[in-house]
Amino acid sequence: MTNKLPDFIICGASKTGTTSLHNYLNQHPSIDFGNNPGRHDNELHFFDDKLYSEKDINTYIDFFSGLDKENKWGDTTPAYMPAKDVPSRILKHLKNVKLIFMFRNPIERSYSQYLGRFWNGKEKRDFYTAIKADAERVESGILNWGSTSYVLRSIYAMHIENYLKYFPKEQMFFLLTEDLNDPNQKVLCSLLKFIGVELIKMPLRKDYQGRYSFNFKIDRLRKSKAVKKYNYIYRLIRKITTTKNKKYKPTMDKKSKSFLLKLYKGSNDKLSFIINRDLSHWV
Image (tube, rainbow, N blue to C red):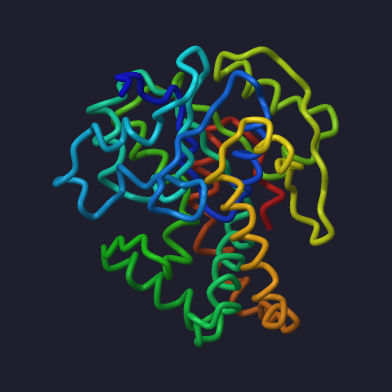
């Protein structure tokens, strides 16, 4: 067992491209990610675990067992971003950790989360009914960031302001989903510099669905991470089994879009100021 802990965390937001970002960084020879053997994806879910108070930090340390100590280690768990108690928990063990946040048009992010649950049969409500219910919960102070938190997870400014109570902005890196579309990889190179590794321009490809992903199968074999190879197979099977449902895609009605535009405006304006990025295209 090693006492070394991760150097950086990809905290979210979910449905913004964090998996693609994870796979991109995982290509770098000086970057490794931890693995939670109890999960079928790349996420660790230590600091947001409902049983966190009963867990020992050694459980988290074990997620990084066997990694090269000379490399930079990462944790990718998008659920960390909206979870109110997570920043203080991270601070307790990782005072100097670097935090990475990715943002997508909040309306698109909310809809993507909804579609994911709709396609797997877990969401029966129409989009407007679902977002209206979550918005009412948020307004009443019920900040439940569970699987139906379509609105809460898109109020980015609220979550970043919470992290800023515990960490200086200098320890944070902000990027947008569309930054993955830059052929010059300007922001991604800045991210590598932020993490503290050599600037290497790594391959980026766009798959047939228009979502950004990376050819990480070869990289996983190169790093000999059997569990991650299993994760790839798992996602492939899941993709095949959900293809039938994805033939039908409910459209976002004008009422829903108008509702979310008004709802997210204040948060978007705050976030634009915090991260010093123009977000006027989020309409």
